[in-house]
Length: 199
Image 1 (cartoon, rainbow, N blue to C red):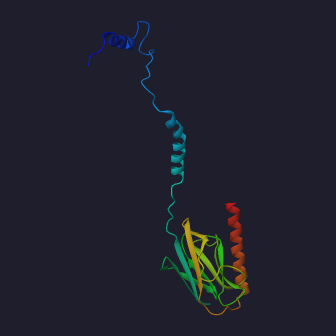
Image 2 (image 1 turned 120 degrees about the horizontal axis):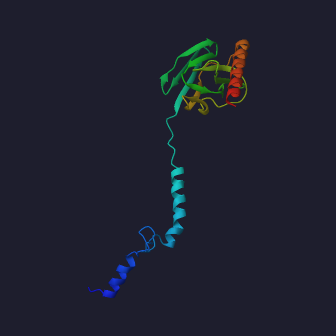
Image 3 (image 1 turned 60 degrees about the horizontal axis):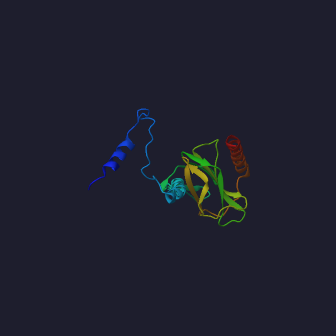
């Protein structure tokens, strides 16, 4: 391939600097477009799609601990966490404490399966941390059905805790109102204190 001398001379003079120019002031000739117009039009949409993909990463749910409380009679209650037995202390008829380190929450009511107007009450009190209090055959209406899990009222070490209450006990008995009312008052005081601290 042969080049015309005049074309080669033009190329040499075009790239050379004159004595009044220096290398910093010399303009670099454009050799071509960096991006075409269609690419520039797609760039904002691509940036939005990438940002949306980063923001909407899937959240992987952790394992939810499961607490199962079973009332066998007015003097017998068992509790298991993920199938492992927990320590249960009887505080009187139809009244127990379940030791569970790291538990936190409010309370939940389960209806008695065989006695309308009576419920089983599981509660957390900030006055007695690391345990749940269980009251059975408590006069009240409403609540969850017997055996229905509750996943919103309690937490264990900051994570979700599913609590299920099964009442296989005897027919509801008349509760000791003095003890029941004092424990209920204590729990309401604890909840009021907790609400004041958190709100």
